[in-house]
Image 1 (tube, rainbow, N blue to C red):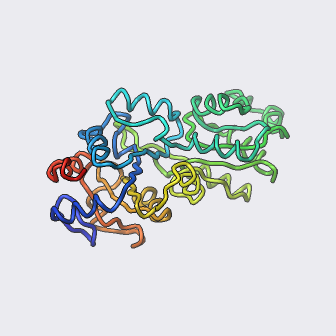
Image 2: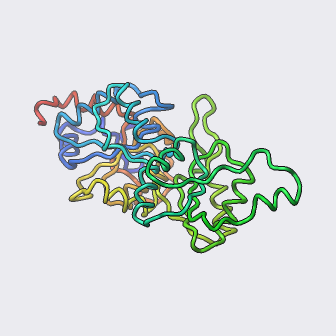
Image 3: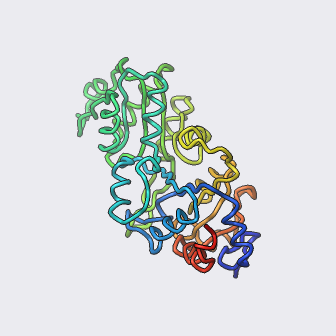
Length: 313
């Protein structure tokens, strides 16, 4: 079928409607995981589609919630796969953390629950990062008490995806967050994270919710779909008119919600977490519905090809 719950498959639209769609935006923001690649392996036709969109005069940038690797690493991966993209056209939570800390004039030490690459990027940006607690910690009251002593030099707790997360790291984060002068900054807060071969693995959601509950603190969230991240994106790209921006994503709860909150147009792809059954059995707020979906970015490129790209330039 071409139309589910008022969401139309762009491939089934008339040529005139398709052309009208492409004429309705100037800039494209695209998610990455589940949209252009899975496990850093590009999906068919994605690099070609980026080039096709640029050929008809669109700007293309990427926004990802992946805060485990730097934008420089992402850029190199894209270059290796022949994507026509600039290093400044990629934004992730690490970019946002650094920008926010600079804006705050942050000079203390950050306690980071995240990847080694995240910690190294913060250091390269001039920030001090606390050492991780020893592992294992001695299983005595005295040893645990020693680790839980407050360190007034810690001025921020930053939580991203930490594959080596431990109970002691969470306990220390809670101790610091009980001080009102300690910033609480987080990235993605998914319940689960897509993972090649295993479908999905546990995300950050439950750990972050525990810290929010026990500390009584509301974090600054630098990831989709938060308004904090929307404000950052607007400053980063300086879009003259959000209505002329198309956001492409695979997640309804993250991408479509983020695009709606930001005032962007929306295009849903079905190569990631959202499947055609989710479109057919819509269980989300009506305002998050995109007008169109495509099976994949490769399918979007086929549509462009049939419209004869040169005639659209």
